Amino acid sequence: MSLYYQDGGIQIYHDDNIELLRRLPDRSINLIYCDILYNTGKEFDDYSDNLGSPKEAMEWYRPRFEEMKRVLADNGSIFIHFNWRLDSYMRILLDEIFGERNFRNRIYRKHSGERGFYANFDSQVDIILYYVKDTGNFVFKEQHGTSPKVVPLFENGYLADRSETRVFGGEEINLAEKNKHWLVSQKQFEDMIKKGQVQIINGLPYRFSTVVPVGNLWHEDCMLDDYTRTDVAEVYDTPKPDAVLERIISICSNEGDTVADFFMGGGTTAVVAKRLKRKG
Image 1: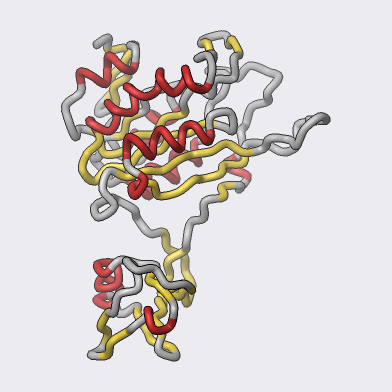
Image 2: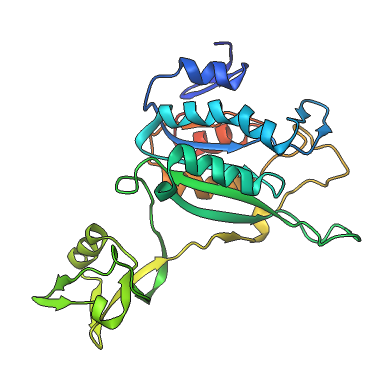
């Protein structure tokens, strides 16, 4: 491995990512974020974004994602950032490698306003696919506001594996007979009970807390690109805003965890990881 830079817990390597990955120990990374090649076919000042056809691109990515799964910790998460060119192909490939049940969400990150596309709908979002190694064991920190909110712990529609009967205050809650299903696991429900957050209204469970849900549409101003598509950025052609990495790292890892970015780019992941007291 060619160590390019080291400062405290942060290490940056100048190497083919597949070679670096093959040298890393099993289950050694807590969180992976990669702003991958989008396969635009473009040649930039510092890299080529041409992997051939979508099928050829997937075959190039396959061994890399297989290695990422191997090095990901048992409670680890992975976020893969790209755009519409590879969306359907990437979802199928990652489902195959990480498992359909380990897919958590598709995040849409608004990168800019309208840019003047006149022969098509203007493309304004990137896509981030979020997977975990184990749906029963992963880090996801709830975000809190100042005012309590009332949130239902159920949703309409019967699901065989999520409509089981649970007990609260000595009384059974049978969602199946109401043609509804649970939105939280048994463990999450028990944790909420211990915190005194659960109340029953008209026979249905609700949570009373200051937790603020984080949606999968990231369109705040801080999430927008701070460079233009016609001028080269100071350090790297397509750097992602710090806010994107801050949200992912702060919610899906703990202080002291190891965060990795195997497509490095402008180094935003390393900068934010260090700021948030993670290793990388």
